[in-house]
Image (cartoon, rainbow, N blue to C red; front, top):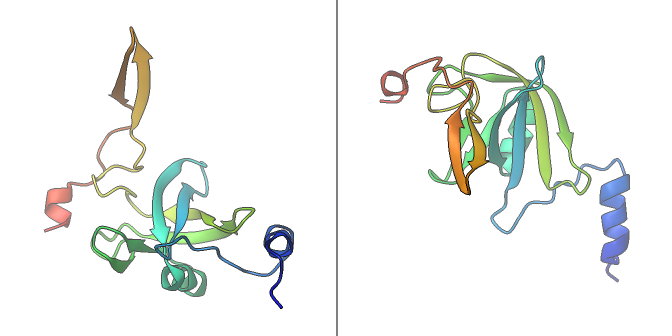
Amino acid sequence: MSVPSSTHDHDREEGLEFQPKFDASGLVTCVATDATSGDVLMVAHMNDEALRKTIATGEAWYYSRSRKKLWKKGESSGHTQRVIELRMDCDQDAVWIRVEQAGAACHTGRRSCFYRAVTGADGETKLNFVDADKVFDPAKVYR
């Protein structure tokens, strides 16, 4: 006999059992924030292996959808993320990690991937740079 989904959902949302809910591609979304400032640094994805490696090692691991492979944050750049705390959202389909960021989080060389603000004036939506100074030159790091 199968467990009704409402019971299963209740257990996932209110219980203490670790039950990640991966999407059809086998991924959960992960938001990484700076543990000290609270700034959002990046949004990436984790598959089961990346999530488990992150928990086991205390270092951030992700799954690259474009490269279709597992990667440890900082493996190329040296700009690592030490996980201070990992939280699951209510239905366990998203992860929030608070990290100590060494260097920059963004592959563009910036501290955060969120370096442009959206503004709307005169019916036109535009992007404006904010906190956009580069920490490193990506051309020199990613050869």
